[in-house]
Image 1 (cartoon, rainbow, N blue to C red):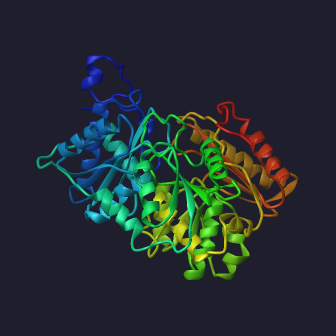
Image 2 (cartoon, rainbow, N blue to C red):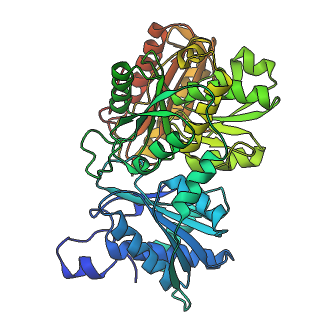
Length: 497
């Protein structure tokens, strides 16, 4: 049956017929407001389409499926699994999970495919699916466009042979894999912030197993998220983590998003360290152990990956790439990079450190190992050892999904035209405009400002960094925002400096 774009709740057709808003198929996963933009029959149609895609690509018809801790995620997963079984797929249900546990299950169960029901860090009212065939990769734009066409054009094919199996023990195996045989040799007290999200069922136990003293912060599972939406890129959560460090005297805080694939850091001086700077700290440490490594950073990230003298001394090659967990995972694998870092808090630690997928808990363990290798250093010492830059948080002005890419195309053209005309930006000349993912305007002193389209929400994304001063950072933002404000379709920011 051909899915409809809209349907009215509390009607016969809403319970019977698939309804899917096309904009939910995004660059590298699928996300909708539920039930406004997709209904349960629509989710089943998605499962049928995903199973059909597996057959079309010659993937063995076996898939591991998990769900995050939201009150409606189990219903979504059941509807998805129904569609997968309808397509003739053997479903291995791993139960409630963080996304990296689902990715791990592909390796642990030797499953050819994975589907994780999660809205990630989006607030309640959203749902979605992260999916992949070639471990540790997840669907990118090509796979998502193919899936979108199969589903929306009603080309899902029912086949016999679909079966269901609930698999016990994956959570325990995942935690065992994270911990290994490592034990801290120095004492650490760490604020473990989970925002009442899914990671609450994992993180405290992981810390305790490696010998870290846990200072709990919202570690009770509660899908109403009574304190804040678990998102360690949002200042609300980072400020709360900072307050917990101050109150407890902890060595630092580690925070996790709604599906546990991201990690945020606050140091012992209650400073919120954005994830790209944490990435530089980790890259410095890892490049001592593995010299001449390649690190991938997303276009929102600090310029220090390319300019830091210590990384240069260790022979590091820096590669700046498209934002997005699927883009980054693929790039890390293509280049044989040791790790990839995203400003949003996704870290992609490849062999021999990790398996290449983004796992907030793996990052947390590796940060603790880093601190163990530097027993005389505090987290603030590691932060202060970095060259000083001034960076904004990620700021997201509203722009509708159906308009944002056209708006961005015009903004990129305007910024490129400024550079070509020799215009100044924040009082400096423009060195270049990198357009691999939106427009990153780089000034003659290495400072920069970025505007791109969010792949997950109806927003643009703005980040700025100065190598000179806070005043220059603000000036860069003012000039970027002035160009953005020429587009009337762009609305208010979620947060601003």
